[in-house]
Image (cartoon, rainbow, N blue to C red; front, side, top):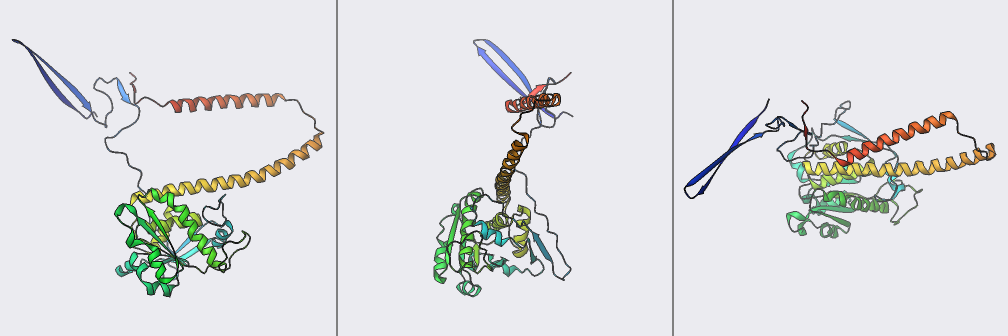
Length: 359
């Protein structure tokens, strides 16, 4: 059903004693019926007057196990390191972190109290998440045995002097790192370097202070502990911990946020940051695909070389003539290639916003 409205314009021209009046009416059609008033054009695609927005990422509640009387969450992750580079740390050390294949966590939703917001919670045995007040608590830092502090600061909210991890870490004689961001999308650019810094520190402390070890040497246990914090411990630092879990343990963004919230129930990650984490997941998947493809390519190349040498020896370097079936198969392949090329050319040219309506 058409939903239209009209706009009437009236123009008057005066020349001496003569007056000429011209009026016209323009009929506007809403998005519910894209057909024009003449009924000869129709929109190629549906359109809306609203500004386009990215899809909202909804985090459902996790699947919990109550068999032991407490809500438990089992996070299953990959047991193989598929990166083709060391942008997140030493491959050998990262492989040692994920050998178990799963992590069992007790969900804090039944024991959570409002005052827990001012404290730091353990997400992993070596990784904690908390607010600025916990990072300033020197007694808590010493008693817990932290060896590294990471501050996730926002440059858009003003001076960052109060969030300087170096000043707080210097009081306890430990290392620190500051992550300065100006927008949610800036997180993706800062994630890899910060994650690598954390893993390099954990590897350093796990091997008795050795700066680097061969990939074949795996640390027995991790001695370091890392505290990641922001002003509230519920926003930027929570997103950073989720990104760390995604990069190291190869889990999706929904599982990562569920894991963080299971230990710090008060986290509140906004939609723009969730979308940035979703984009980061896509980049991680592409990085793993490249590493997997390179590994398979190297293996296939070795197999092909061996197979080719064996074939040449058996065939005596003889070339066989093409059969009739091979000719037909080549023709079908060429036809399919031409059809795909034409479809790609049509897609590259695009389409008009409106087209003639069939009568």
